[in-house]
Image (cartoon, rainbow, N blue to C red):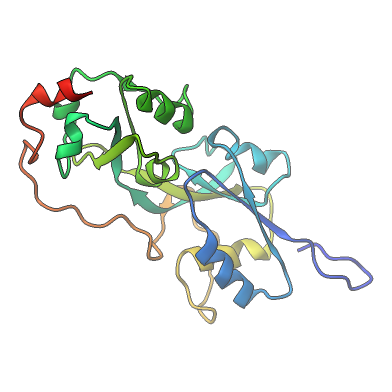
Length: 226
């Protein structure tokens, strides 16, 4: 932990976060436990989510996994349900949820190379659909698109990453915050890369049993409404 020899407050602890990740709850807990060290939240694009750890812009980062963890520690915090974003009037609008089979034959935009925002804008123009983590679909939601859960696609993990070679007692404090430890709990050592952390109230809800053909997705004639 760095501080000025004259006794000035320590440098802020900087935590980057990828689009759609909401660190506000953790920031409040940090303020309660570390009132003398300001937590500085650094929003970054997906492309820069680990670059900020190498160029010194952030000490830790809340990232969308997987990442190249060669020189980083990573832990998984929670997983998000994937959703398909489609233009208003698309057949998925009539369904509560869809499957990958329902989207067969659709032009599905890839993220990357498009950003989530660019993909949603393209969908809103009536060109194809895109599958995104729930939080990104909500972040870029528009009146001219709809989104529905895709029940049989892999969930999208969100995790915490930090440099292996850097030692800072504040790392363990923040790990304790995001893993839901109490202020008085024993912190222990740094977990190995890839260890899955217990969620802290942000885990995606359990899915309901579903039929292979979701209600409302039958009758592809709905596509004519686009």
